[in-house]
Image (cartoon, rainbow, N blue to C red; front, side):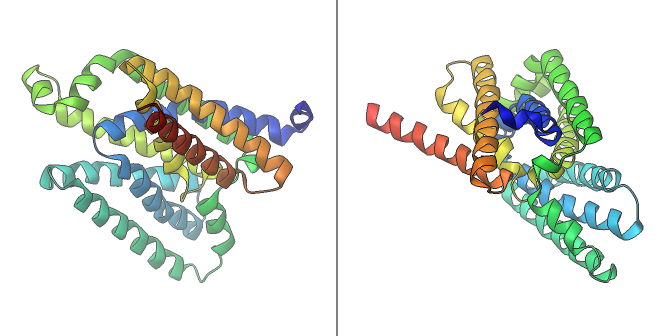
Length: 268
């Protein structure tokens, strides 16, 4: 089974999976607890506008995607203040706007970017490049460092914004920063996971860990471990079954999620 790692593309894919598994589930935990799990899906759809813009202008799609996603992440926080108790309205508005904008930009490109956009829709971790792996490790370092430094303030902000405000925490600035970091992470994950499946890798390991962990820190550790196991096993299945890697990884996570729920129900 180790012959996979004789190929350079599998070595890069393995490193990418380590990087993604180290930070994506942590972001997912905060998103779920903040009742913003749809934000990852929204930003991944909005990122298509950034990809289309980059292809149209002939610039680095990573740069254009990061710019668009950061703007969207800030705007999403603004919508959250307007629809505080109905956040799904804000995410629906932003998702619709992102998809509409991407379609308009694509129409201006004369259809020449269809194949490139398809790659961004579904992604391929086995075709990831060295510089993309470095970018994933860079955002991993940022997420892990911020989590280690601000885990207590983020914990308070996540569970009770009013308490966080009374404690003197910069609630709005922290929320915007979290959205921006999440947006950049999603933009960097898209070449590997694809815009349509990136939210699965963020949300599902976290949701599984929340059912198993007995403490907040344990949930974080379990989420990272589940993310790593799911991605590696999905990559193995993809290689031997000759199926798309991102789809195989997604089905593995869904299977683990269903299995955990089944076991918990049988124990009751």
